[in-house]
Length: 121
Image (tube, rainbow, N blue to C red; front, side, top):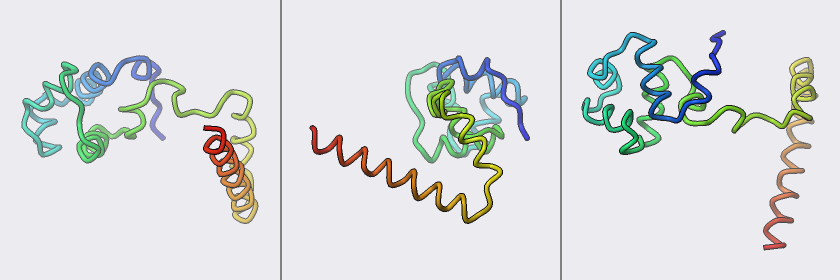
């Protein structure tokens, strides 16, 4: 299991990409070669002048050995709220059938919430 330091999570995308690249021992050229893009694109991403496509984000994540979420999202941007973290951790102890039930229940609540929002707007 890979342990991510919080330093990456507090950085913006260009700084996060640059830091991960350097930590993994890539030059801008070697990362560009690994991803299959021109080195000038890596420079633009690291300077914050442009954003990569979804396909490039995927290739960057694979090359750097991290999740695309780590590259793109800020700390806690995609995490459950603190009040629910323990409940979600408890789900890891559920059997397959119980997980299906919990997933169905959550999906139903999300659909209900989205329908309610759509009706109000």
